[in-house]
Amino acid sequence: QVQLVESGGGLVQAGGSLRLSCAASGRTFSSYAMGWFRQAPGKEREFVAAINRSGRSTYYADSVKGRFTISRDNAKNTVYLQMNSLTPEDTAVYYCAASTRPGVVAGTGAGYDYWGQGTQVTVSS
Image 1 (tube, one colour):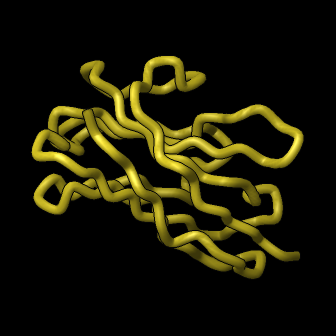
Image 2: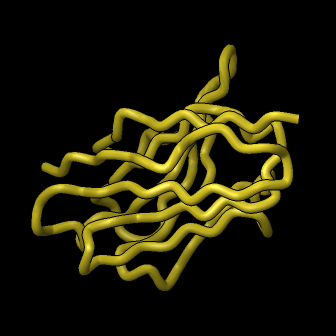
């Protein structure tokens, strides 16, 4: 089992940047594929980015491709989401998640086994 704690959210102006972090408990972080999801008010949760166990493979939603970068540091049990060129449409609660499946796990989130509590990102226009 793994526990996930997100941090780094906040209020930023459009065009700005934020870096989210997700710290995982336990000694087997490198055995999990990781992902970031977000949920805006009144909307369904959506996939943002995913990374495989080693960090060598990543996958992004079209809406964030070229602006967001997912990375991980297995020595620090942490996954990151660097968000650049933010727009008000990026406003949401951002969640990190861990999956026991191999490879890069995208999709609706059904492939993920553990979730963090979320961190709010608000982008003002």
